[in-house]
Image 1 (spheres, rainbow, N blue to C red):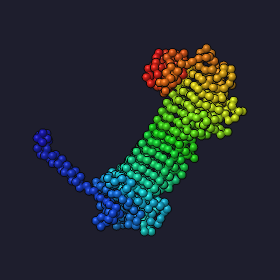
Image 2: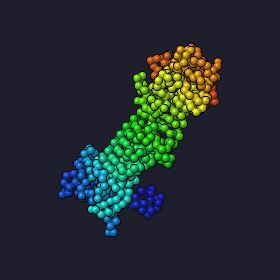
Image 3: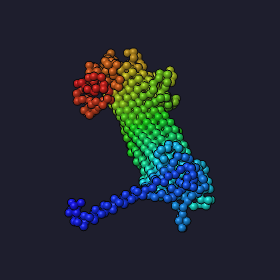
Image 4: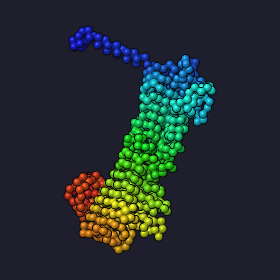
Length: 612
């Protein structure tokens, strides 16, 4: 105190101390003045449960808490549904059309923490039909920084844009069509709540808010054709579940949707689970939805990122090839670390896709992935069974694992394709591994040209660089190049069956195509353009894979080369060599590169020590 007085002068110092003391006293009084309004479902102090709710919401002040105890509160009664407030001029307040409403700031409405949220039920009218006295939404908190926690909202209803009270029209605005369960201000928070069978024009469950966390949204419906959705205009959504909702799940989320589960939802208005989504979608799981999951409406409504999500067995009638991520616009943001299970679920990307996994479990007449300019560090595989077909086309179309994409460090394996190909019209492949794929025709007359590892059309030019193709089977390695030129460099073909005659099992078969080989290893039924001393053409050779030397310990990278392999240092360098990395993430060194998708290993892959 003395130091303060001496620095500020005695009078100024004591004034400052008094000011601080007054401020602390004010804060203390504010905290002490915050009230808790308990509400019980049974009659207490001469009031029914609904009357206790009305009393609490009418009298609660800023900073107060309303605690609702276990029980079912039936709000579909005249005393609750037709409540409204107006000033002397008859102007309607925001309470109109809402059973429980407050405009004070910092109000907390919570369920009793000692009870299950499923035992604290606020039940509304629940009909999706307009009535003369409509708009019976359950709760509206328009004050700043309000919180709703640990409650179940059941059959909330905001069904039309026209509000009637006792048969008289008193309001006509979209505000009354939103938030069948709950409406918050832009700073509001909803946590640990359940919204079941709610209905509204938009935002069947929640309208507006800053954060939703740990909530469940189920069986809701919204009537707006352009994606009414269960949750409307909430900035951030975390750790929540969306199940069996109609008309989509989320509209206008500008922040983050993270760690959420979306299951068995649909949108009968022809759009997706997300609409006008401009935030980030992170670590979410989508399964068995019958609509596009992340709906790309246009350039101004792209997610900032789509990362770490799983899309399993979703479908969509309007965009059947984009049930996971798609829509009328191409995605302009990177897609990272996602898993797709089932039919083709993503296409039309203008940015790169990386660290993704595509799993095909059953046959489908659409390709796995199409039209992505750059695909890196990704895996494509089928749950392989020799009696099953993972891809099957119609009699007039082909299917492919990958179409019109540039591939870098990708792994394609275990596909059984009928009337199709592994790779179609891909302009560039680098450091990729293709293994255990089967391509075959529909009939004996088609066996010669119906399917193959590669298919190129319209005179396309392509480059395949430092790749490995092993244990594949097809009628022809190439189908219909169409006058284009394809160059293979530093690429290994081994133990494949591409048909043809002359050397028994053939790695490569392209008798009528323009194919150049440069420092490649293959067996073929005839020489190809560019074949010469730099190629291992038609020889009997053993690549010496690590799996041959360490069969019991090599699992993740069985086709890495042993240091004594004849393919070590057998490739031809290019300007790309110093910065290039192999499929396992190891750098290609400045000396002669190895043939295939791996630089050689000293020990089994996993130790990742290179030997030169």
